[in-house]
Image: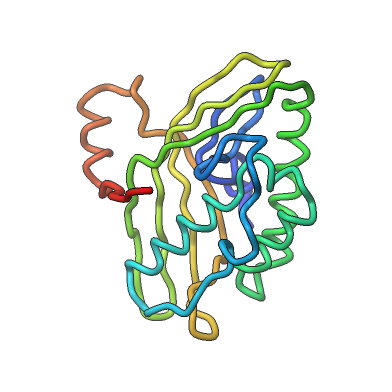
Length: 198
């Protein structure tokens, strides 16, 4: 796993007191109910770009603040999505992120939520896929004021035993509103919009 993967890690990172907050809360704000076992279990899939995007999105939306801070739930979620060869590395990566986030979320009230702005399939073959997800995140706690940020999280997947499995997760800043409009527009055009309903 690269140093870049460890830098901000999970899903969209937002700076809060110089640490990265992952794109947590895609499904819920902190303090809500964690996802059930059924909701985080990948089901049988077709070998397609669409299902690769679904699995990447499901992984990121399954690890909200409550799950990230709960060692048992976090390990269970990662085990269900990770490729066998990458499971230990991903567990270590998310455990490290948990320590960083916990240090900033010591005091209630705690809040974290993200909104998906778009997705992009960077690479696709029948045996592997790379999906990038652009998101905005807002979060804060009694210790730190709310802060918002934009980033792109790239999830690498492999086709293993009839389903997509995650091998790597990394992130980088932006595209963000403070970027020059020409740059923001050019970068944003590379992402397709999510279309979904409750």
